[in-house]
Length: 316
Image (tube, rainbow, N blue to C red; front, side, top):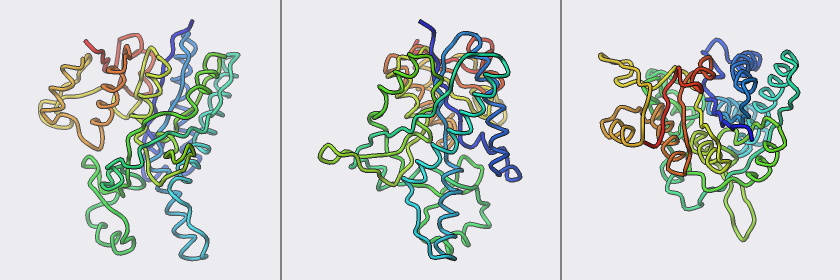
């Protein structure tokens, strides 16, 4: 049986800067990332791709607000925005993979699975919104944003600017996990758990969508563990984990284990809006029995799998 990698792509990495926010720009970024992912597939490893959706959800919500303000159209609930991004981003990844497969004469198909993820209706996250979505704002813009959107909660995101934050409950289980496993076992490359999944709660054995955004790294780690993936890979903007990131004495880290992760986290090395959720997700995967996790940039994916790049994290 082939090895399996679950590869999580950040939603911010699909929008490179404020001048490249069009759908066409996002597709170009996806095509670039997909070419590196298909390198892994060509090496003989099956993949499941997950992705973030923070900026994209924010854009959809803003469009909805403008449409409501100016044309009195009905607002789009956050949970529906989650679903919309799964379809739209999944479609682009799926198409990019199809075209890359054709270029390389790889006999394989990609498919997007619209994925629901169960959360606890009593999760304290609903009382303390913390998940950044949408655009970054400078400090000088904050007062105006608060006047224009009094219901928004803004928070500084890893020193990069202020963003709206929403509830981010922890994932409990993935509704479509058996369907994802079946597709993987039948040779498909699957795009799943987009944006962390569509958050739903169970009430009287019925699923009900809730307005929140699940952290895609946590949901991806859960999926990787449940699929018994050989690799859980987080593809992000940096080539590896750093100590003293963007500070004097910055130093790359090639290998980590659970003990070292805990020590670095307690010393405040991981930013809450940036590397910390990735590290926590890696820990979740390893504690659930996962073998190897990797944090690296898209262009180094294949080298990282071979142990020649990125940060490799194992239990011991």
